[in-house]
Image (cartoon, rainbow, N blue to C red; front, side, top):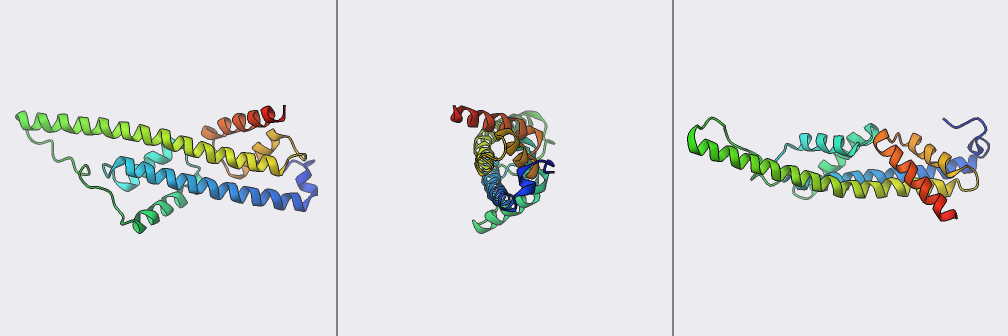
Length: 187
């Protein structure tokens, strides 16, 4: 909601500029989430079903609810365009029914593969976090620049966070980093 005394209430032109900046920011954010999701899916190497891998990605990266479905749809579309699917070598573990030394070896190998998968997921999450942070900050900066001279940097970032429904996981980080960088640049 726009505060009652906000310059946005008085200026249709400023509202239009902010709407355009928000649209560009959301598109950039969506692209970054899709690229990060594709990299995350590649890192899992087909060891997880597609939907489960995306659920993990959504949870780890705190993907906003309003774009979650679009990220999944675009990631699937991109996979389909590029031949689809994942390598299947790790997709099936085999049964645990076997007793004795062979069963023990299979369980040990499965544990190693799971540890390797966890490490790949952790690395993919770190890479995705950097990419997404850049997209979030670029959007916040764009809105700050659009509203420069009309509202404070803090108000501009808060408008951005509210408009794009950016959740608590990212909101605090984006807010403090964007406002801090703007204040440091203005000194």
